[in-house]
Length: 403
Image 1 (cartoon, one colour):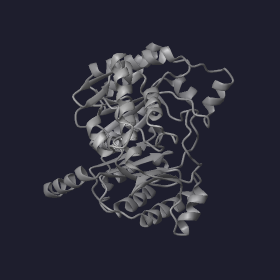
Image 2 (cartoon, one colour):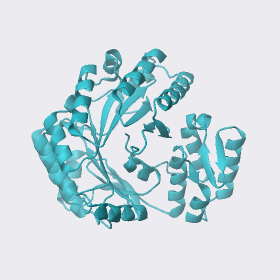
Image 3 (tube, helix red, strand yellow):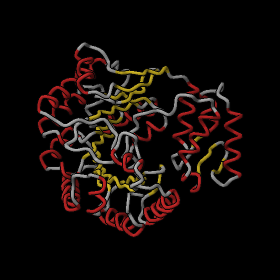
């Protein structure tokens, strides 16, 4: 790609970024903590899925070129090298899909092979996110993960050797039975590999996941104070290792932040393809039906498979930009949001911001507000308070990707 082409695309992205999220729903087994839509792969299902991604893309009105692409799952790495290539062809046929500024793919360590990586690199993928979760064998077993510590190391070596511009490691903490020393050891092992980006997620209990059953039966207990200590320990140790926190759960070396996620948190547009994939595009938000067969049937009839469409308004987008923007260390510019949606109840928001500042949860510099360390620990609760202050009834956007 020429320097002129990059500059022209950067200008377009600056005006109106557009992301593409492809949900690859195939998993060989279900992790105990996971509630994302997934199915067991078969040759026919994979073949039909790839064809329908291409068909669904042709049903979209692409009003500007793509700036970012993200493949999540499921486990995209379960696809064969040939199938990965065919899925990439569907993306490259979309305007801007031939050379997006960033193209991320989530991979499970056990699925990483040199042949798969060669296909992804040739297709234009720039960023690989490895779902490590932990380096401790007992904790991996407790999560139902299908990989070993040794496979993590082999996968990382292969990804680095393939020459991707950015590599992310996903880790989880506050796991059942996990000690502070074990979490420190996981951070140390991750840092020793020298990835460009680290995502650290506190274990959450989703109602559709196996861990929720254990929680409801009393076999697993929540410990908010321990979670808070692990959060703070994570931030301290990763900062000392040269990783700047730019969002509650995400840390990066300079220039390696996930652009796709940044654009999503800022309430820019994205298109979701595949079963259960969410979209926010051309004035509406919704998610595809979480059923592979139903999604394929609807797309085969020439229909978008999106259900529960919500018409977007500037107050709604401004509110969501505030909720998700405060999760970022840079915070938000309240004056810019107010100009975007002057009719929103900003007086109540200002009152809430004032209280957060008084309680040491936030700081204000001019018109920009950002959460402090204590506030970042309470980011979810603060988001809920913002929605109450702005009379929100429908909840927060669905379908945001990690990594």
